[in-house]
Length: 189
Image (cartoon, rainbow, N blue to C red; front, side, top):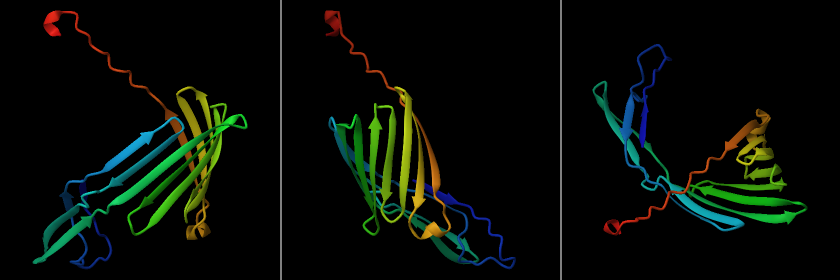
């Protein structure tokens, strides 16, 4: 992981405050891990980011004093799962859950989509203490999906936020299976 900044402080017009950060750059090891299992109609996954909780630190001499600047990464944990109920009213219901935490704060997304004829979908998302989203989508080609989502803010920001629009364009490219090489000569068996 590499983190850096080079601030250009404008106000105040007098001498700069020696405690304000100056140019800073540091690099350290960052590790992540995840595992995922997929069945026919369900999936489950677990992952974690910033396992090493890297400390990016640099000491700088400013006006005769040594100022140490640092940035500490925090470990985050994720758990996800989903299930597809088939043949419900001529379509499928796809539900999933994503839970994330840093052991200080907790957040979860609960999603449900109704997929009709494997071409059209509509759904709802609930993000704990943050937003509710409405989703619509269309699959004009086998490997192409286009979608739209509108997030309705439900926390304290709702007094100044009218929500947000999201557009989705997804195209799947399938990587061909590698050819199995067979030897036809006894020397290369």
